[in-house]
Image (cartoon, rainbow, N blue to C red; front, side, top):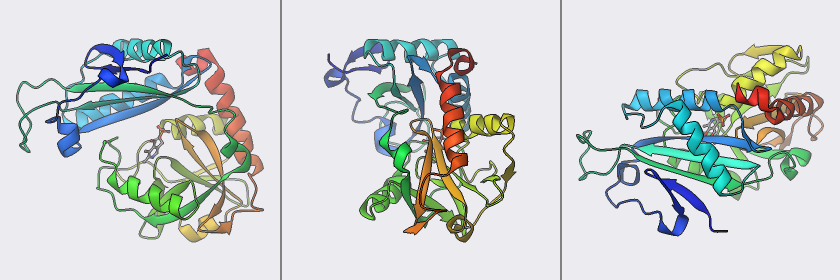
Length: 287
Ligand SMILES: Cc1ncc(COP(=O)(O)O)c(C=O)c1O
């Protein structure tokens, strides 16, 4: 079956999906995006992802081409057309096509592109073994709360991680961890409390982070929303990351130092289980 993508109102084979040369996404990185998991055929945390998309678009003043119901229909339709029941749906909106000039063009329709990536999220080997992380300086702009398609700093950070034999980079500013290249970062203290950086312009408001915090409260796990240093992370009992495409993944080393006993920790495992249970439930995931 040919891979079907969505571009500007049409579903079509990926080979036929062409974006014009003068698209502002290509020339300026002038656009925003979203990424959402699909599990057992249903969208995980869909409303929260669409709410964040609406906010990103508003913040960069790109008109939102679709209502929430229309976005949802497109997501469901692209998953259906690709026969995908578990994986990731990516969608982005750019300011559209216009002669290159910095200021917003007038009367230009946004470019909307969407594709799927089939992926085993629940049975990912990284969830069993845990992953290695390195720390790198956070070189991004000051509006990291917007899910911008400008990802050059993350491309460099994650490539540095790969070259060091790691699977994620934790970005660091003034000695404090901001977040992962494409994930939210957490540690667990020796007393069993989760520590996560509070929301601000310094990090993306992760949707998986948000759901997990609610679920961890229900499970009676204590939480501290505060900054944490790289040294505190080295010394933590456990560390983990969250993202829509991985859910909850244990981190077993940071900069080559083992975290805890160097194996996925019990609180991380429990949180992953709880999250998967929520994500597998059509009722909760649809809320
Ligand atoms: C920089 C950054 N932080 C955090 C996340 C996790 O966000 P979510 O849980 O909404 O996928 C992502 C996901 O792409 C990201 O790019």
